[in-house]
Length: 68
Image 1 (tube, rainbow, N blue to C red):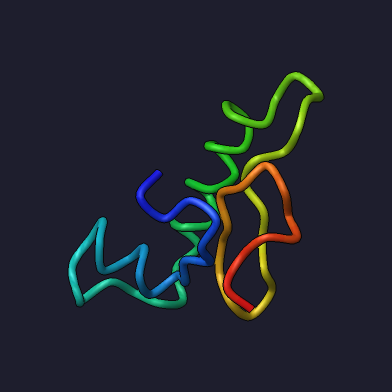
Image 2 (cartoon, one colour):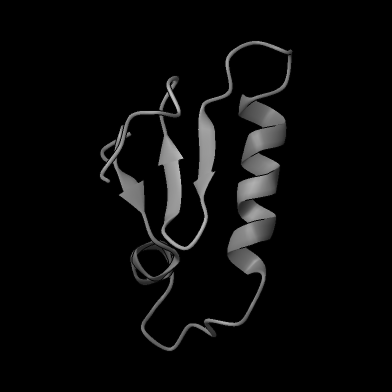
């Protein structure tokens, strides 16, 4: 929630959650994002977690908002 409406890159997530020795080619972040989406975005309402290809992830009810 601290980064609501801001794009957060995979590197930022990895450094915040794990350490600098995190394997960048691992799909761990993708798996966790998928699980969060299953819990948060289920129910057919407004999607909150959005993917910005090549940039990272965005937590916002409006996918048009974010750092561009």
